Length: 335
Image 1 (cartoon, rainbow, N blue to C red):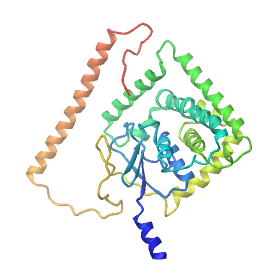
Image 2: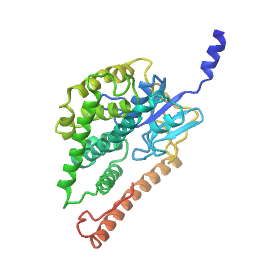
Image 3: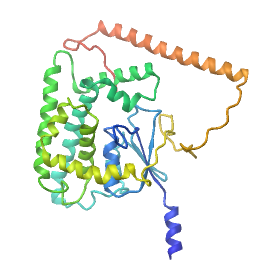
Image 4: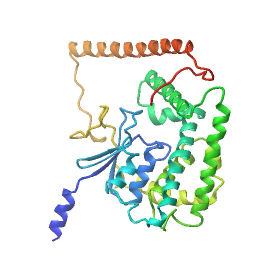
């Protein structure tokens, strides 16, 4: 029987979470990836953590692979929602029906009001270096700057922010965030978890949000100041962080980090990945053909960067002539 159990365990497919890279003392520093990481840890899932460095601005990150099963962040409400609906991670399955309305409204509040507030601070009010460290530090400098600028414009468009209404929009964003923190503090009270004394996706979403706010956003962050006013929420974060994040991040059996995730727009697992400790291959003298190819590749990349900058400059000039009243930014982008 023991041998049969061992064979069954070996045949079981591995769970892989592909996220943006770690930083700021966290296994992943991305505010969208952290809740998924926490969700798998709350569910006691043994998983491997890998990084996709080639698609830093893609909305399919994070994604989870389990054998032939793959679920992406831009599908059906996100990875956590898909894992619940597809019964891959059943963290919410035992929640009583009479708790569902309160649970659902709390979940929506975290994934909208608080998520939007983090998005606003990260891309609009914070120092650019924080977002650049999370998303673009592995890209060439010009490409990273262009993508950062584009994402900032997309966030402003999402919130309807212009130079004329920036102050009012900011006040509204922080007002909703304060209401959310007050409601969550009252709901948690002195409990260990938000619902029924056991973790649910609400705990995953809030822990991922709060850890990002407290450890990644600067001390001048309005969100960080607002969250810090609620002692029971801080206690919840500290207890769960020690148990779920710090232990797993520092343990020898913790997640394995890889930067080999596919560079295609739709990720696919590679057959093998190079171990970080693998000895480098011996250097060999390049042929003249290889040297010529490398020179042409550098010229091609440089030409692409210059063409992008020129294109954006022309597009910006065209946008100035077609501004609508009240929209002084003049550029719109799809996410």
